[in-house]
Image (cartoon, rainbow, N blue to C red; front, side, top):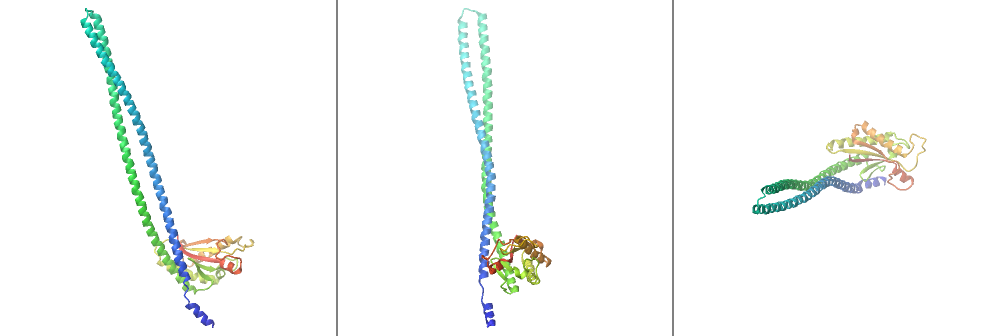
Length: 343
């Protein structure tokens, strides 16, 4: 009868690990896409922030030049007004000279006085002409300055337009880069998931579906009693035998994974929620879980697994997989987890 039950257990197909693998793969892909989206948004915000600073600086320069142009125009208008006033004075002086010339010519002949008056009027007329000439020079200079300011404004507008064009091109490139990055990373995730499935499949074969060695999500879970004595962190003979199988499978699958996939095997140590006495080798469950994870990593290294492909982490009692304080729940929570993931 026991033999019949054994055959039925072997014939029964357990679909649950495959479903969990597919679900974990979907979750990893979603998390990866979210990470890429956040990265692209961060790069885009940095690029837009830089462009906004340039645009603000160019707009400030345009405002400054516009103010200078308005000031120059006001100065030019004042000069033109002064020139008009001087021209009017010049015309009046010309009229006065003509009138006096006529009076002198019609007079009885005070020639000396006439010459003095004519000389005085001629001097004033020459002075007005000189002032008028200086005003014309100032107007010409203002016209040149206004032309130069207009050229600078045109150059700034061209630079602003070019900057906006580069900004649009940069945004297009960032969008394209993000899409290509998404595709490339998705391919890498798919490749790693394929090798993870192969690795887990080989472990299932060599570990013979033992009840104290399970698959939970995307991790292989070993109960601590299989590997360690109670409260100890040194692998027992049975634990070394089981970890040797894992190391051999890891070395085999590691040779098949391409070099550009930065894979690692993460070894996580967990304990139950019973506190330690504090008088032994380890003060608390933190230290015990870390020491056990590190012992597994060092054993893998001694069997030829590259050290740069391994990570050890201790979680104490703070990541249980079974709630409750029963002996069964605590036994499940005392465990070593192996997870093939990307660096």
